Length: 246
Image 1: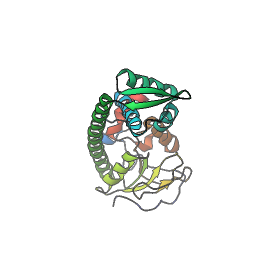
Image 2 (image 1 turned 120 degrees about the vertical axis):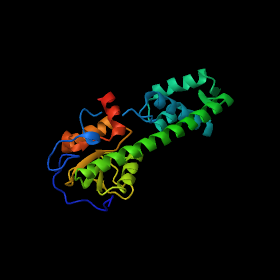
Image 3 (image 1 turned 90 degrees about the vertical axis):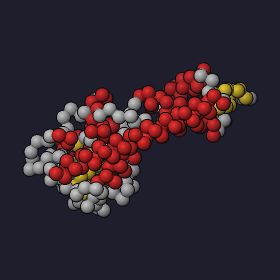
Image 4 (image 1 turned 180 degrees about the vertical axis):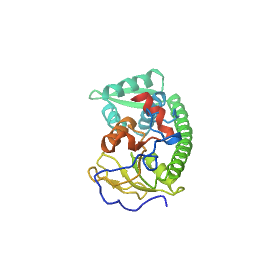
């Protein structure tokens, strides 16, 4: 058991109470009380997010001195004004040197000090990522064990990316099946072999489990809107993030 290879027949989105059996109440690690765990995840910690933007700027400048701020903003997925503020910060810190070239253009150069900072931030990111991976793996293993003990056998993941992949792999250790991955970003490719669920054709399952890091509260609300708050289960690794953001 662990991962199902196809959708269950569409049923209009009916789902049993997540983490319960025979309609009972949820308790312990499967509870969905006010979404409620503080984690050292680069995508969730505001300070780490800021360091991640700086790391990416230094990395891109190191790769291409001719890159402009508009390209940086697009690549980083942030506003142009925010990009300008971060670039100025890097210049003040002595990490980036700016030279003006003809036609009102600028070239950015990574200084030796900037290279050292980029290396430090990259090493920190890897440490944080490994810590997050270990916590996420433990969180989903604990959650799936509790769900299976409550009689839950069919689960849908709500989210995308690395966290969904971790959840799929953890499910292989437990007697339950991941039926599909629910998302609304337009992507229809599978996650580790688990098919995407098209909105409007929701399968009948026992629980909907949150598995998102990029925009956690939006993913949680989408899932709740689709199947009801009582049917969405939040793993411990995401609960405090939701409590802080909602």
